[in-house]
Length: 429
Image (cartoon, rainbow, N blue to C red):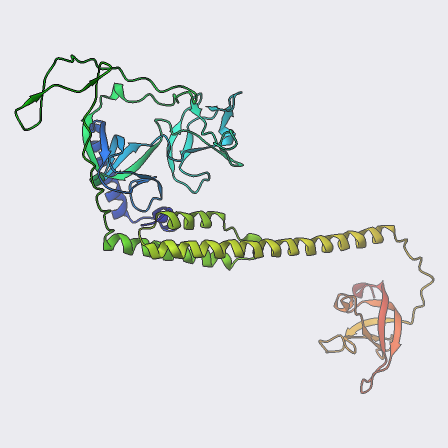
């Protein structure tokens, strides 16, 4: 259906109503009851290309594909899902900051408390288990480099006993019960160079007779070096793969559409804020595991477009960074010049007139916003101050300096003020 946490994303957007909380509580009690009665067992996979998922539901991404008749250890059940031990060759990652690598580079010791294991090397993958402090994990060694497989932030390990995944219960056939004390030990990974234990050789009597199945006849067994040579089994024709249901295909298509919308919304953001890595990984899961072949092909096409867009975004980020660096350099230059520039010594000020400031009734500064009245209440000049607010001088007795201008149609000469001083406050005049 989906290869990212669709349900978790939607649940984070809205608080559940009380009825949902009650149902969830009842479901938890049911799950606890199931867990209490459950007994581990060994099983085998019945279908072809059966997917192992990080959680109990098709909304969880697949991380491994089982082959038919592959053996599994079932350690729990949840609804219609079997919780199984992760196969040793399934992807299993742990954050590098919480482990210490051994001197030989072939194992790790966990140094954090209850550290998550994940199916991919990032936090977008659901945890598939936890390991405790002091646990030893075997490293997965790259066959070409001979070094432990790792990314910048995660290291890959051989899946320990604590790593679990989920398989649809319909595709697991029970073979035998396993006593809990006989389950594989947890967090004690096998040494990478250890040779596999030799199977105990079963001795047989060359003179013994065995019964042929269904015939009632007896025959002497073939013997070679004291061991029974098993008869050749008739080759079984592989069973046809199960066709996905309409519901599975519809759910998968709906989730894929949501993923496309997430990509669209991400590309609408400013270049500096766009992050495509996690979305690309989700489309990679579709390209590999989608039930619908058309969606696989579309996912591959979208991955190519994401890579092309990523290059353009990186180029735009670089351009913006260069422009910002130029602006920052210009600001620093101006600051430096301002600090180094010596203040200009002002000469004696020539005052043009002094009087009381009043308003002209005009809102605009041009040609003038205020007037200067003499002691006889006659207008001496109209005033304009381009670099300040004359309203704060209204009613005050001041003197002004500046440039005198005459405007056509304007009744008085205008002083464009360069300097103004208060001589007498209004209440003191």
